[in-house]
Length: 168
Image (tube, rainbow, N blue to C red; front, side, top):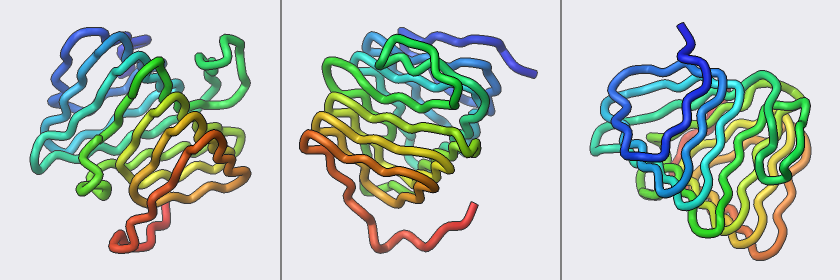
C-alpha cells in the first residue's frame, strides 16, 4: 500500500520497502538505508544537500514510474523524473566504491533523470528515456539510457568497469 506523498527533511531510517506517490528529500534530509530495500514511487526528488546513505551491507533499488513534476524547472512535466539538485550537493549513495549496492530504474519510455548543481550518485542507472547531468554533477557506476544523454557544464560519468553488464 502506498503512503501517498512523503517529504523527508529530518533524519529518516528506511528499515522496510516503501511505496509512495512522491518522495521528496530536502533541506539537509538524511535517509539511511538498513538492509536490502526497495522504493517504488512516481516522483523522486532530492534537493538542498539531502543524502541517502547505505549502511554497510545494505542495498537500495529505486523504481520510478508515472507522471511527475520536474522540480528543478518549476513546471509540470508529463514524464517520470528523478531529480537530484540543489544549491549544494545532493548525494545518493556517496560511497562510490559500492556503486553496485544502489540501482535506480526509470521504467517509462517518457522518463527523464536530471542531476544538477554538483549532485552525486554512486550506482547503476537504467533510464528508458532521457538523462541529463549538468553543473558539475557526477555519476559513478554503470549506466543505460534508452534515449538522449546530455552532459553539460563540467558534468561527468565515471564508469566502473568492474560492474557486470546488467539487463533490467
